Image (cartoon, rainbow, N blue to C red; front, side):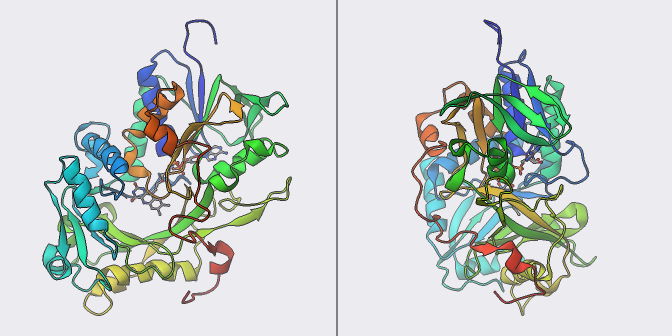
Length: 443
Ligand SMILES: Cc1cc2nc3c(=O)[nH]c(=O)nc-3n(C[C@H](O)[C@H](O)[C@H](O)COP(=O)(O)OP(=O)(O)OC[C@H]3O[C@@H](n4cnc5c(N)ncnc54)[C@H](O)[C@@H]3O)c2cc1C
């Protein structure tokens, strides 16, 4: 880096974190040399990124007031900015939970002066809303249901592509390549990152490397320096997956898509996490995700250590979904719409896909310098809720790169931070993918 000029950057991964970082970086430093590198072309018909999807929920409904505020900031741009506005749909969100979630969200919105369109409703009232669509849902043990008419969903892959194209329009260079490791100099307890190495033999040099590699981050760090454990993510990050699929609607059921909200049910917890269903008008369908969160434990070929990583195929084997995992998404549909009262619960699902994300034990992102390596920064770990922050997360990454991140976020998103001994939700992603490769099972 010459005196007075901006440092050069390589960003690994063009999902939400990488794309948003590239856009905000080039806006903040128009003359900077910014390269965004991903194994998939930005306009490929399908990609492995968690951020590539037909649709994603965009909501500011959080029990944590900091994420509520951050999501409200993002939502304001989803509503107004030409990069994202064409892809945002404010359908409303219904959130069924046994916890105090509904009350907490309402309180957060009230505290932030943003609560006009939401409420915590008794179950009997919620059953009647949206034409009784969720009358048959599983409400076991639920006191109040959150209904937020100011939340919605986004056309995910289109919004992601729009962000990348906006960044490229301002001068970001997009390179399609598989990164095999970050390039390190030095061999002591503190080293310097100088760029990345790609599978086709190229070296992309940079003063600063930002790793936004999602579920692939832990393996990439081990691959980069197998003999240097200080670089590795260890217990900080777990690569984990959920199954999703689309449910095409009959011609007569399609009008539901014009009025239905996003429907989430956190109630059926015996297998893992919440299930959900959201409109997908482009395919005349719903998209649903299942309850089983799983990991894929592999033995690292060099170090022999166990770590979770997406299957080591170029496309993460994301379209190879076993009958047992197909059952899981089918079951989600029944949980949301009720088994007996609605024919929607029995729609035949297709386009089954496993979506891999990087999860942290507190579900807080990592947006931080790497504590052992100069010039290396980590910005990822959406923990299954990162997509909605697409319009703003890069602004926070740029602040982190400048050493100007708000101390509250700096602590919450640090590489080195206090971790609970087990995940906040107990045994998160306790299932192993290999145990779900059989032909259908109850649990
Ligand atoms: C089923 C599912 C549903 C979800 N629903 C929602 C939702 O409704 N709302 C919401 O807000 N969030 C949701 N999320 C979470 C959200 O999608 C993720 O948190 C977010 O997309 C993660 O972004 P990322 O940039 O960290 O990772 P990714 O989007 O996974 O991007 C990582 C990128 O890095 C690239 N990469 C990795 N390794 C390499 C390498 N070695 N060389 C080159 N490129 C590499 C990959 O190709 C990929 O493009 C969901 C997640 C899943 C799995």
